Each structure stands twice: as structure tokens, then as C-alpha cells.
Length: 401
Image 1 (cartoon, rainbow, N blue to C red):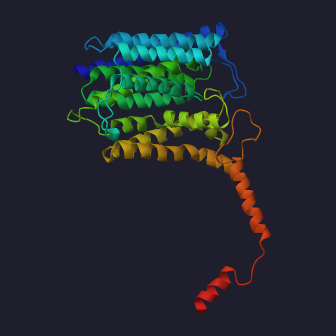
Image 2 (image 1 turned 135 degrees about the vertical axis):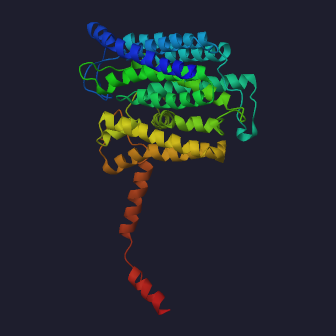
Image 3 (image 1 turned 60 degrees about the vertical axis):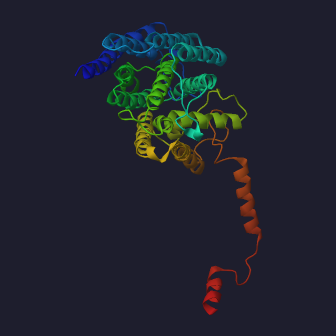
């Protein structure tokens, strides 16, 4: 019974603090004129306060620390230290803007703190490619890479109302539920503190009119950091397959739970590299931008993506017995197709101007495909229709013989 109380309390406290502090943050942002100024790649035309991450940070930290009294959370001090560093880095970026290299340096430092001091790292490949235990140096490098990917993935998908927060609420709730069922209550508290803090923000971000607010880098950098910790611990606890509620193929399952932020980041990076741009160049080539170009509004695009992500999660949980390699192949293949569908539809409708500097259909409007299509049409038009080559005449000959 005590476990239920602490987990529920972590959610309620984080939700209350987040929701109560947002109006104050909005008022301060307005007085200091700290707004997101719309530009050519913005998905909004209004000036919106960008410091919602402050309320997320306060809700998460206080929800976690005030309700974890009954449990000893391993290396809690390093979790708080990592989140605190990311908070100040994001806050500075939201106020005065930081270069990509400085943000990357801060991310590497935080990853190092969490991995080396906090011991949040992968120690096993779970038999993937026949590998079980990982050497320490390889473990540190892979774990560091995962942290960097997660932090940037959640930073990049924060492009429309409610998307980053909504996906994080869903993913943290899934991990938190598993942690609770498997008896790892301390990480259930971490998960649901995150869910509560984000829920308070989500309402103002999606449904706020006069009190609308964005999370900014202050919030999105925190999300990626926490999700990296949850994913690593989820995989570490599932090394022992004899434990209650152990999940087979957990690396592929955790990838499937976070399919949208991970696959969309991979897709956008590929587009930028094809265009010979830096992978960190801001644009409007994300899948959520594609959905907006198809005529959806922010709420419709956000809820559609969350629904598809939830359905995908349900699918991978039911396919976990097929093995890590096959399930990861399923993630990449099916997830890739799902994320390419909006671009395919836009390629047909051609609703994106060819000279748009912020978004372009690369794959389905690539010169190679266009030239081949024109060549095919030209060749067909140049060929005369030969006698006896029509379908009707061929059928007559087949019937005759």
C-alpha cells in the first residue's frame, strides 16, 4: 500500500507545483519580454513565452525529492546534478542563445557525470549479435552516445504544441508502470514525477489561450536527460530474465516505445546531410511539420503522432519474443515507412513550394526520380504502337493457340 501512496504522491505533487507556477512564469516572461519570436521556420505566428521548462524542472525535482523519503534512489544526487546542469544550459539558451557546440559540450559533460559517477550505463547487449557483457570503455561510449541522441531527439521534436510533452508523458508512464510492476518503486517515482510535471505544463501549452507557454530548451533538454536514464535502467533491470515482469528483447522494445523521437531525428538528420547541411541546422522537415503541411492543426498532429506511437508500443510489446535483431529490424522498417507516409502524400499533392528554404521533399521529389520518370514518359511517347501488340490482340493470339 505504501508503494501506491508514494508513486501517486510523486505525480500529484509534481502536477500541482508545475501547474501552479506556470502563470507566474508567464507573467515574468511577459514583463522581461522573453518570447519566441516567429520566423520562417516557426509553427506559430504569435509571440509566446518560452520558459515553461522552469515549471517542469520545479515540478519534477520537488515531486521526486518530497516523495522519495521511503526509498533510497541510487545516485539521486547525480540525477539532480545532471538535470540541474541541463536546466541552466537550456535557460541560458532560451534567454541569450547558445551555439550548438556549447550545448553539445554541456550534454557530453552531463552524460559523463551520469555515466561515470552515477553509474547509469549499459552493461549488457542482452545477447544481441551474440554479445552479453560489454567492456567498460565500450559501455561508457555507447551510453554516452545514447544520452546525446536522446537529449537532442527530444529537443528537436519540440516543434508544435504538446508534442514533446505528450510523447514524454506517454513514454514515462509506460516505463513507470513497468518499474512499479517489477518492484523498482524508486524509478517509478522518478517516472511519475516526470509525468506529473509535464501534465501541468501540457494543459497550458496545448489548451492555453491567454496563458499559453512553450517549454523551450529549458524543458526539452531535461526531458532527454531523464528519458535516457529511464531507458538505461529499463534495459539494465531486464538483464535478469528470471525477475518478475522481465521483458525479452528489452533494447528493441525500448526503441519501439520511443519510436517517433528516435526515427524522426534519424530521418531529419539524413535529409540535412543529403542537402549538405549541418545535422543541427534548424528547418521544418520533421514529420510533424509534414502533417501541418497536409492541413492538420497542432492538436490533430500531436494526438495523431502520440496515438501511432502508442499503437507501435503495444505492437512491439506483443512481438518481444521474436528476438532483438528481428524486432529492431521491424522497428526500423515499419517505423521508417510510417514516418515517410506524410512526405509521400505531400510529394503527390505538391503543396510545399520547391523554393521553400526551410522544408523540402527530398526522397519523393529527388531529381533522380523526376528525371527517370520524365525519361520513361519520353521513351514511351516516342515508341510507335506496333501491330499485334495491343492487349486485345495478344489475348486473341493466346486464345487461338
